Amino acid sequence: MGAFDKKTKRNIGLGSLIIGAIAILANISQIIDAWDKLFDKDTKTNTQTTIVAESPNNSNQEKNEPPQTEKVTQPPTETPTEPQPTEPPVDYLNNLTLSDSKCFHNDEDIAEDTVGNTYTSRFLVIGESNDWFESKPYGMYYLGGKYKTLSGTIAVGKNSKNGYIGDLTILCDDNSIYDTGQVGKAFAPTEISLNVEGCQWLKFSLFTWSSDGIACDGMQFILSDFKLE
Image (tube, rainbow, N blue to C red; front, side, top):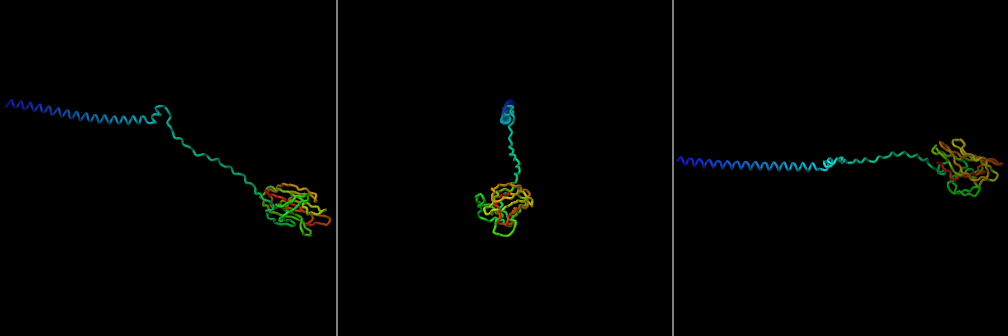
């Protein structure tokens, strides 16, 4: 009985040792698994860190290159446009309204001067008519101060009578700005250019005389291409 107890106790002791050893081995296996997992985690973390470290921006910094910055394009600056000078209006005298007149015509189709020139457009006639009464021919236009110059050609009409004398005067607001002087049929066409800046009323006035007295049909003057600008 005593011997059996010793043998039994020995077997039990050996069994306990084996069980303990197995438990220790199991614990070691768990420790190794935990260590492997921890090592794998550290490896992944290190790999991610390495990838970040090799990003293009860090690469440029390691090479001492300045970081690339995005260029901002500014919209083009518009140059202010200077106001253009206002051009004065341009009109031909034929197109203006004849405000008041005597022996002054702007509706004839054709005229001829004393040197053989023929006029078929943009001309006016002052002085010649079928009226046989004493008068001083004139024509008046309202300019309203809109123009600076008056230019055109003056000629003596072929229908002027021999022996008659005419004196054509151009006035701005009753101030004379041009005078032909006393002329007869021997008068060459003359181009003129006059300053009419600020002029309100433009007037053409003809004084005609002869031994027979003053008459509208004694002298005829042609105003060709008279332009206001």
